[in-house]
Image (cartoon, rainbow, N blue to C red; front, side, top):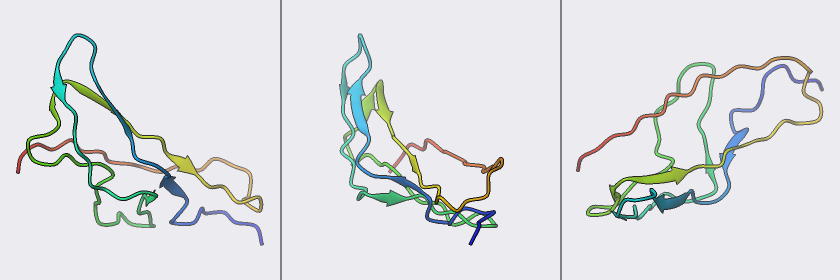
Length: 95
């Protein structure tokens, strides 16, 4: 069966993001409690927001870079063409 939409479970993060203090700065690396693999929720209408990464209290301070590697599963029976999606990513601070 040929598909013209991708499954709502097609986008995943297989392992925890990497974290590093930015060059020339000191930081307290974020302690993340999100479990992996993580599946990005998807659907015809916007799903409820979820966290792909978080920082425990008293961590994640200072300038640092968090790198998330996403994977997209495209089944062999997918119809060739252009597919689009909108992702909204928020960086939030606070308890």
